[in-house]
Image (cartoon, rainbow, N blue to C red; front, side, top):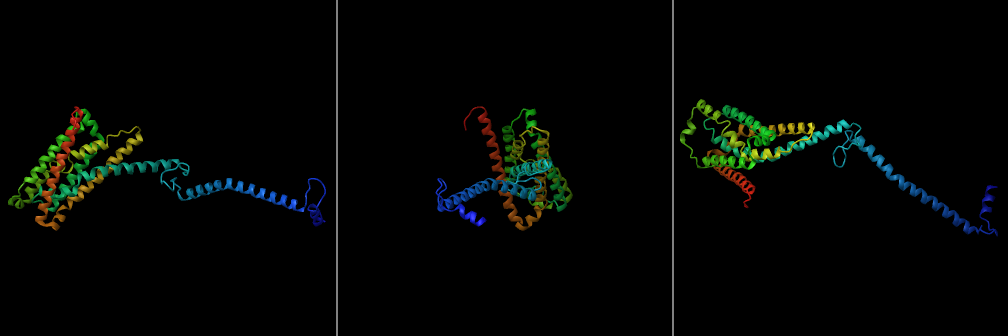
Length: 309
């Protein structure tokens, strides 16, 4: 009966508006196409939502601490623990500030270039004395860098000084030391010093001139003041800057300690003649650096009084 009824639906009829069998098939095809288009539109609307929901769930599984898989930065939408996201944000900021300090100051200090001069200014000292001297220089350098980073700008304001004045004065001292080392003629008696007397003389040079201006010169101090001149607006930012300054200065101090501590072993590879050549080249580079620091300070002072350069 159903089959006959279905056949009767497609049977030709003379009733107006019913049409023939072909018209009925066309109407059925149109209705099926319409249903398919509606289903496709609904799927097209729902598919991005499903993809986004699936991607977010996948990222939450992979990055439980709330880091974006593209930028690797904290994303509060992915993090169920906002405190963890804030912690990692502080870690990223601390790491960036520390790397900025090390990258700006360590090439200027250049302990590898100062190692031959360190050996030249500590004649007759044994390994234990140079090790003790390297520790003192590293500690003095750490304190100077930390003070310059944290309190350098405030000290200049209290004393009524400016960075160009520090550059001119410190650059002149670096020039004087470089010229002295460049024009110095080694004496035969330098290698025959008593170890105890050589130790006393070397320890007396630990701060000046081995730390200032040989290791930490005026250029390093001025750059450290400029790097630490940014003031924090919150207690959290102030703590981050404090820890970054401590970590950066400590990393540089460790580099100075290791370089000076094992400088004598490196000198054995070059020999006496090679070390003398390195000392002369390092002294000449120090003289050039001192001239550059002084000239930068002079240009800044001339610009302050309106004289073009």
